[in-house]
Length: 381
Image (tube, rainbow, N blue to C red):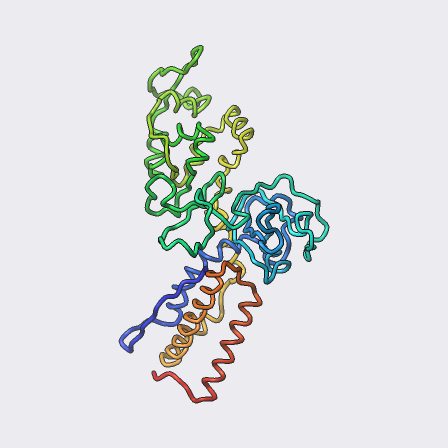
């Protein structure tokens, strides 16, 4: 599910080394592993309380549809639910691992058995029963032949098909955050920000909001414009940026999902009144740029890099002669093709790949390799 195969065709005229090939795949693997590397695969996250953001799974074996929704952390998905039918939920914010609590009648957590009966601060959705989007379909969906990407809403954290967002999906969507139409309508003040921030590049946002300051004065029932002007920094500090934007009354069609550019959260008003409103609406996280999935993934990538350090294997491979490198590249491509097929079977069945599955895969690879040696098979270089 997380690995992509790169076809590599080499001739004597080419100068691609094995290190070049591996580094191309490393970039893809770093992006994929970022989701998991930001979470602990060995220890249950329950003692940490409500974790700011972590990879989560739902177990259809232990908590099937019709029962109570529950989520388990990465480590518990490996240690306590190995071989179970798991739904991969990607990441969720402010969640505490449920594994082994009262929702699991026949299972005790192997990593952290002492848990409260229920985590009242957790939020659940239909995702925990393996369905997503406004169409409430599984992913992957065996009955859906339309190629489409799924995008996660920043607020409700549901995953929606691009074709069900009610808007045009922009290019470089991975660099933007999306809020679905349902959440926009539930928190209508976001439409005011959307009229000024959404659809703009980060540089244009800075120019638009920093070049001038707009002032408003409160009347009995509304806020009226007093125009644009340049004042000292102390005078120019507005009491509430949201009210300032409301006074401009810039129009925008209020329908469909909204895509927000990088850095948009820093443009939200953080006055005491707005902070209170966000807290009461359960949206305080919007003022925290470290809450973003991108920040979580970057943290995971940094963790991976620190753990890997300088890889002596990569240095050793670069010192092999051309014939040796070609032999290893052929072996490497064969292994990638077989690994891709192996992972596709799990993806088609909606199963999570466990460390035991990977171990068995490489044992089979070693067995095949010994078989080729015994029968005298080799690559001509």
